[in-house]
Length: 344
Ligand code: CP
View: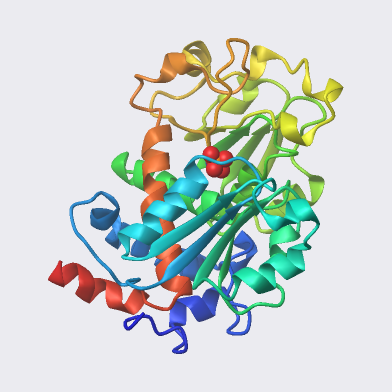
């Protein structure tokens, strides 16, 4: 771990988290300038994420990747990011294969694994659980999703993707019209995104949700207080008009009672017909994924897959560079990245 000096405070890390709690738990830890710096760092790491250059600033470090809920892209892109910076990864998935299945507490688990790793990512089904996990340990903990709470790195990936897609179109995120569509009540990714987007200037949010799945009022009030325009819609017609960006989300059935999870109408589905009838020609379409692949799914149809405006796989690709930037920052090695890339 010769090159990893976590004792020396790095300025970006200090602006995101206090020295005594070097964790990334919520997007509320960001200000506009620290967000911009982290996204720029992610941009500089793209050649490494895309396997054109090597950079081994985390040589000797080990990541604990603890996922107690299902995941494909978050767990694997965190692992890939750490490995591509020269580190190694240990994974555990599900409660069944951890000693929590034998009754061990989250607090004991946290104290134990903090002795093994240089950084830890945790996904857990209970809201607030990752903050509790991080409470008594000094090893940096990243929230990989805590129940219906937050998914901060997904929001970072989303704004990074938005900035790139808008730059390609000659647009900026400041002043944009953003339609958030689907289950806005239970979706931690879309709520983290809504929160972090309020750091930009004068956005117009169109919140499109089935009855009962609307965005929590306190998040809407916070956005309005910060000078953003927010309108709520119960159909796609009003919601997609003038949208620079459509962010579709899945109905989060796993966070509902079984009977409540049925019967959400397909009229919220983002598909070729809806986009061509209702959205501007240069709209950008994102989704945090996974999308529901059932034929009756009501989030994002596969009939848009060949449409260049659909950026969902550019969005997933961006996950590696953004998560590299998160690790480099929390482990205090981001100042070494420019030299590392020059030498690569
Ligand atoms: N977006 C997201 O969190 O995907 P996974 O559940 O596959 O990690």
